Image (cartoon, rainbow, N blue to C red):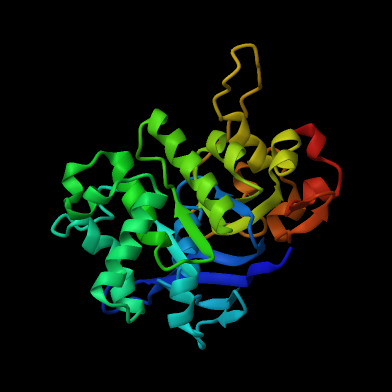
Length: 326
């Protein structure tokens, strides 16, 4: 499988101003993230709020460039000093946002919303743009007459279909899906997920699926990357991660996922303490203040991702065989 996205120690650090006479603080939203996405697969990125999922999405879609490290997308490398061929990549990567109500301009008709990427990135005539827009509407299950209506005339699920139509109109290779169904009713979620699966199969798309809902991720992902405080702590095939989670944080996340089977009984792992500040992360492993397996090495050294069967995990307890005690 060809790698279409490669991240090598990618970081994003924001300066936090505290006043005229105070030194700015660095907020490490993403720090030293390294991963690979294969062409045609779905990589799910999960973790609690503040772990860096959406910041990573902004870098993958070139809304921001990495402060450190290098991001290679479809053969083009982006760094803080070298933004790469942005025009080419904006057609290669598109994003679908979480909130379909806020993602669409209420003053524009649906046709104008969908055609806007074509106006910016191509030299097609008005008639050609309209034809492509109507084709995109049909791809997402909407009718030609929807072209001339305003967003407020549609339900949440229909608005998300419009957002997906706008994302695919440039014929991208990669879609970044930032919580694409979390704002929708459960019954509508299933329809949108089925639509995304159908589009991936027909158009050969690669998905980077950002979510906090592990029950959804289980059914859509090929592989899962678990992030904590801006760093990946576990990357695994979806079946391996759900059957045998290795990192203590991954185990805690999965134990909090509601089970659909009433007969299934699991032990809830409760994490103590609060999520540390990304401005002043703890020394060593960033998870050590909340980890039941942490020892002196965890508090002094930061573990790197290493292979453990089909899984890559950053945990000294797993390396030393202490994970069974979790």
